[in-house]
Amino acid sequence: MQTQLTQTLECGTDEAGRGCLAGPVTAAAVILPASYTHPLLTDSKKLTAKQRHALREEIKNVALAYGIAHVSPQRIDEINILNASIEAMQLAITAMACVPETILVDGNKFKPYQDIPHHCIIGGDGKFLNIAAASILAKTTRDDLMLEYHQKHPHFGWDTNKGYPTSKHRNGIRTHGAVDIHRKTFALLPKQLSLDL
Image 1 (tube, rainbow, N blue to C red):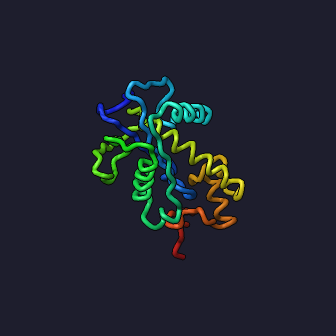
Image 2: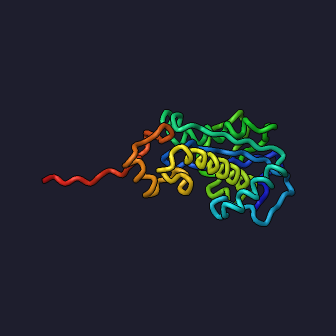
Image 3: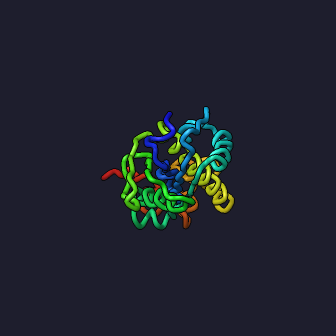
């Protein structure tokens, strides 16, 4: 895995929670030292929760700069999940203590940000350490937030599914109805098959 794509001050950015039915989409942006390496640092989805939380502290300690941002379910419903994901990544970049010279984006869609060159990289969180670091900060921050929401709404199982469309989550919606942090434009329940009799 590479540390950087260019020799400039480069940030990686990624989001978490795009496919969820509830909660915000959360993004992070990270600038790592050009010489930085770590044997465990990779795509957050390939790590255990314990590894992710240990790496989160490591990343925060070694990063030259990092930023984290949430975009609310209401905003997601307003502008759609793709635009909300891009907005979250741009807000995370804005939250950093310094301005990057290049942006590496996990995925294939982004919008120009302050005339800074950007590169979209499919599977970037498994190819570049700065994107992997951003994926870990985004996921751990969002997971912690969903645990807080679970305390208020335990019947959706957010302590385990983190808002993704599992059977327990959907059964909770079916029984208790949607709450304020559900994304109302998403298919919260699968469409029922109907027969013309």
